[in-house]
Length: 257
Image 1 (cartoon, rainbow, N blue to C red):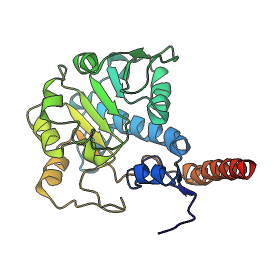
Image 2: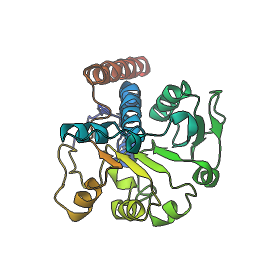
Image 3: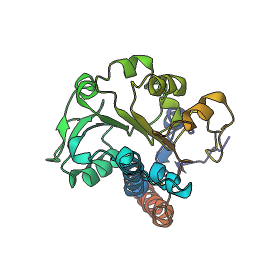
């Protein structure tokens, strides 16, 4: 209905809530700002991963209950792991860069791009990534092709019972399949910052369902409320980057006029 609309700017990375195909038909440009919070996402999921692999929250909670348990809380070192990164855009690259200082083996698969220049990553097929990874982290946009990408079939192809990390969109994970994987130890842990049960505005989620309640009963599952990309700096950076894109767009419009 907005006959003079020239652009839509979305403060964030995902644009699945915008009808981009229709916008293109109407010659309406769509901007987002995935580069603004990529470092924040990388930091957050690294923190979740270290928390899980080194039993930080678990042992801290035990201390709060008066339990001093050392040997049972020995963790695993990241240097012993092989991590598979699915999607090598802004956040995937930021996460790989952080991980590189640990000397961890980093495998990367991206459906749309290849020929990565980063010396610390190895480009592989999705099958090889599933075969070799002890940790798999997803950094992909949500679309109908990615719906329930992580399902029972995907999990069954993962040979080393990996830790699953998802900070993309909740609907790429079939949460029931993930729960079954955790139950059967086909998944050795999960770090989730997003859930398929989130409401459309992402400001709340349906946490009272049986699947989430059971997931939360496992000590090897960490869930945070879709906060990976949000820091005081990233909140400001979204506006900065979008304003730069809008200024450039308006400048080009004037030149074409």
